[in-house]
Image 1: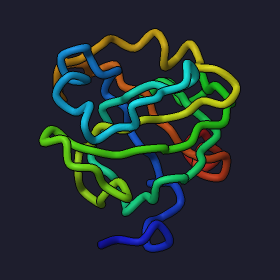
Image 2: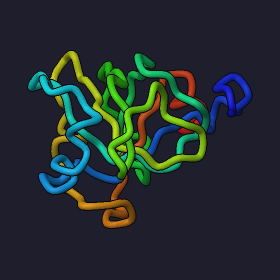
Image 3: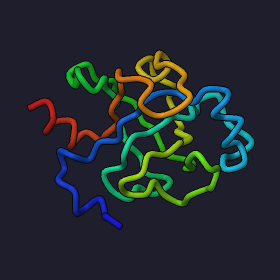
Length: 140
């Protein structure tokens, strides 16, 4: 276990590797809510920097290699699983996971334009998710 408060603020970033392909969705559907509003996306997320609870809200998304190209939008972690379709109550520290993320203001282009992937490591053009405080430390 690693609490978010134990992580330096500038390292509190979730890295998205891509949108879940139909094949991935088929294999993990039991672990995710059956009803998914149109403002949600199922994302493959890289190693978690800490234990991130369901309901955690972030507000900035940016291409990992171009942090100054940020998109300000609110997004919320709504459900978490992994390749064995076991539901989790958090994104566990150090795990790669498959997350249902809600974008109340609509799915931003930086996420919508990501490729559908069948697994981790397929896409190197990742997108990072964080809050304002973390983003400011990254770009300054």
